[in-house]
Image 1 (cartoon, helix red, strand yellow):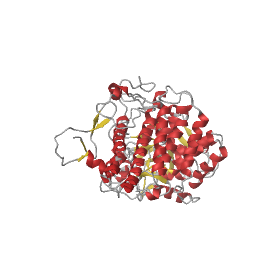
Image 2 (cartoon, rainbow, N blue to C red; image 1 turned 120 degrees about the horizontal axis):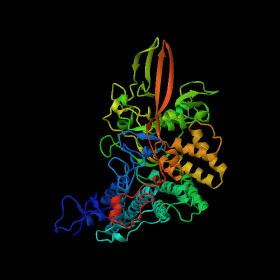
Image 3 (cartoon, helix red, strand yellow; image 1 turned 120 degrees about the vertical axis):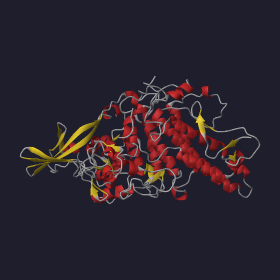
Image 4 (spheres, rainbow, N blue to C red; image 1 turned 90 degrees about the vertical axis):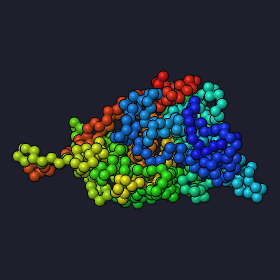
Length: 592
């Protein structure tokens, strides 16, 4: 007789973890359910599926995708990728504990999901005649959830590794794994799109779905995300290194049209919309946007899908403990880069470098409009909602990054280091290395570093969909249509309509609006700007000098992390251990 636990234990196989199963005596176990009990009871099937939500890997973690982009530097984790040292033997930060989910993590979850899809229909067969209709309706929704979760896993694999083995049913121990090969990138995209379409046909609206579970909108949003990726330069400009990392004969107009229509399908849903942050009041916009990411639930029409947390049990959300300023007793793991800070426009929509020059790494005001020497004044309101910088107010006190030097008659008489720096007398080891820390994604009134966060994690937010639609429209030559939605995002943030090149305006909005939402690395790759843009990380050093009573302040950038990007880093290598198990799998370009 065959038995399975509800939450399946997994062990390594050629490509992924297999469900545990044991031939044992005909004795009903007391610590697990038999297959018959598990799959014939609709409530147990629901409990089984819940575990696969956790297996998606979404949620807050100390190491986020931002750390392999130009948004930030991660302080407490080794990052082989940004040094150009990533290899099939060491793919950090992918696939390691508390890092980013990797190949094996996703295939373990796919195996669980496929087992569910293969068996959940047995609940209908076992139901009484009076209950069959009700159970069938529940099974249909559960199947929709499972198809969505499988599509999500394959989307993560496709955007990271390219075309991958496509497994549509539960794998068995005696299966011939040597026959399993990588599907082409095109085949992988088609598989994901079909799962998204099938899921959307079965799932319900958000208002009729338990919060945090998959909805019709979530399935359509996932389809929008993967089709935008597929239509982009990385995979569809005709120069892909193999059929596994792009289309061999791409039809760009058709690909962009599919991406546009996928985004429009989400936009046409009555349940989605943008939050009002109080524009044109710029201070209110900043405060409202920061508060938006502190919400404990997913109720906003701007939130399409995400994950909620409890302070009592379940997965731990330690965003404050791992990312807030060190002077409050926390550790600043995610260190925003000076490059990102300088990217934020001025509040009138002009570029920062129209008002500040950098001479020998020292910032100098050259503005005819904004005369303040402080580089943090008069910026895009989203800057203040996203990043904590020197003198920013946090939990009732100002962030302190500057070094105060007193000089009298040409002699330095005093030097005091900022309380939030690595030279501080308090918690210096946990201080930011760049001079910046996150504001976005943190809770403002959480002051004890031992306490958990309970703000929700957002995987899909409506602005992403609007920007997906705008980008596809630009590529199709529908410039005025794209401008509507780019300006919609800007105006909601208290910013004026964009000026200049619309492609650059679109890319600015994606970088700023979606900052630290795990989008930038994928965008850098699919636009093929990773190599020129993943450069050394700069931080800021601020000196406030009092010389015989006269105060002057300098803002000087300095390198905090050296980086080297090469073309092969556009894709992540399949781990050596997986290639060794299945030699027929072809490795990604540049990693052989």
